[in-house]
Length: 151
Image (cartoon, rainbow, N blue to C red):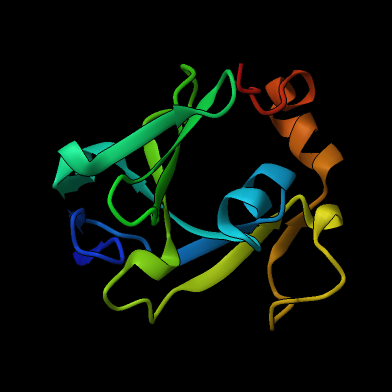
């Protein structure tokens, strides 16, 4: 399925092909600070996304293994992407709210579930819920990595 989307001001827009109908939620401390709550992301291979307005995309290597990007004009978060060579590198995690039509996605997993604040929860329970320890067991680099600090 093809979907379109973009930032709040329209300076960056995208067309994504073969977009899955599934999404995941991340409650890790970095995603919570980056989004203000939790990242609800849709995984799309990088070669399936065409960006317009790329000169308006700012990027930050937020850890030794991943980067985050946002619009230079309005500050909208655009994507999270694993940059370290691995089976997960190259995919974009596009925030669901960027899609022009965010309907039709099924949330299939929540990670860092034990870091979710008690002040909110998402409807439905028929999904995989991984704790931080579960995530580190699957991706050992997480145990040795935290956010890169400025300066």
